[in-house]
Length: 174
Image (cartoon, rainbow, N blue to C red):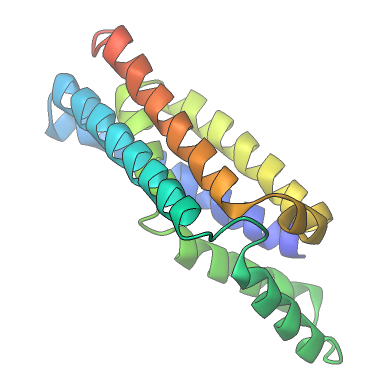
């Protein structure tokens, strides 16, 4: 139920974002949307790397996220309550959809769909989201306790900068 709801929300968000990216070039020239995407990738990459450096300097993010303990405590409190598949699915969908609205991944999807093939962006983004959601649902607790938050933040920053570099090298006409 959690997988269906969360993955469904992420796929819906990816389709919606790609649709926005498809409309954007009709409002702005392709060159503008391409360079805006590159600038956003540089911004997000730099921001994430700065967050990782700050975490390192302050000794934070070395282990699992502090949110993991909060979620585990909430789950223990609600373990006695029986909820239907549909209720859990709707809750997972709603929480994921709202949490992802305006997120870096949504803005990146809009930018990629504006600059590249929107169908490829939807398929790749949906597949990636489903893979990540599967990992989170199947091994979320073990994964969250074994991967440091700052490593994930730093890797995300590097990945955004790689996307920006690719955009700089390829240019808007590719």
